[in-house]
Image 1 (cartoon, helix red, strand yellow):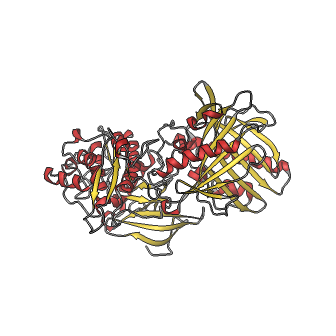
Image 2 (tube, rainbow, N blue to C red):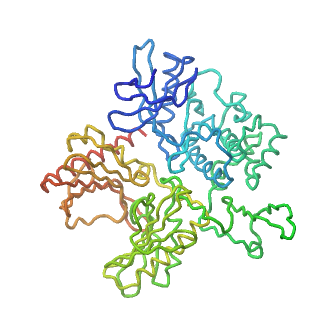
Image 3 (tube, rainbow, N blue to C red):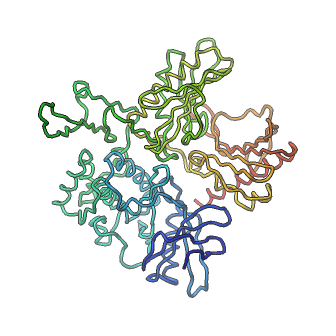
Length: 585
């Protein structure tokens, strides 16, 4: 294959990413959806039926589940005659490339990435699949610093249900494979071992070689500094002695609400830390840097904030919220189901007043000029806007060095009687303090498999559906976490699809109907748009009924009736797409 060739009349090859006897990986352009993808096919060593069987096996492994830290499989393409087929996998393009060959990472950053991979492996193992080839080259880095696990060509199914790879020698990478993998008997703990070796390699910047021997295990562990105890357990030659992935992830993730203090007298009883002494200099005192190791991650007290949102889909906005910091304004309650998935709310009930809603929402990097005065708080730029009517607004802008991002803080009350901006400032003070201590914690509140939190809004409206309603198929523009998507530039109409959660709609002001077999409401025009909400699922939280819904809005300079017809049509198509994805696992 050459640059410019087209696969399956759709994917135009742009450039080679990986090439060799065992396989080819290309960056390609999807002519239908107008997006970059990665296409992969077997190399000369596995041509024809053997290669097709390999890729089918890998496709089945990838199709078993969706996870924010696993490369997304879009399609499996098989062309040519049955006796000599040409097979391709079509996957999401992860622009940052693999972690192999990079300069050494700080222990806290290596821990953050490996914690994400550990979460992906937990999901894999729940489907009775062992990856069998965890290494830096198979961990890709997205544009926002998210780790994505790739290459399931060596995956192995457990419990006698057959291997994912064909019978024969088990694929593995020397130096990263657990001892039992070398004997052809992989098990879930094998991935724990390989992840431990990978963690070492990311910190030291070099291949660890044959890490299985006991004499090497101790040396590797020492080189990982404050992570040494965990790494040593992960590299134990006996699979039964290795920690579970849940233990690994907990040991690598930053704990919610961790406080770092440089005063030794206030650190009594805490796990750790080490003094890194610097050689004496005449007329100067000895210098030292104090590092703290708590049940989470490595931090440096003071200094530059290490804030980063990291992977958008697993970042926990509720890690920034603390009802306790606003209790002086009334009775408070934390509600993680009050708004979109990128948001967490604290409700405040002042005496004899309407409820106050404190919203903390994660957004991408801000690209506009501040809309108000800017001040420095815990090392962050905080934009303070003046109160307007029923709302006071603050914006925390994260430094680009950590991947960027924005925390939007809005405090609302109707009618406004409480000191809304004082409440906003208290919430911002706490949130910036949390961010200063390190990367944002990952979500601990688990959602069921049918939750919209696991879906990608940009995949729910295909090109044919958009052309039918809009006359063209504009390129999707994902919002934070892909829980929202916009399609603009389609002539006179624009489309916005959002995943929402909160209290059930009472239907007042909307037209009730049913779409895709689900309750739905079509809302009359507000401005130039018509919105249709389709209830996806209903559940209970602390005795209160909650719903998740798909909210689709069509805007444009067309008659109101047409906007609402297209809104309902596209909302139903999106709801059916979710049902189809769930039916296929």
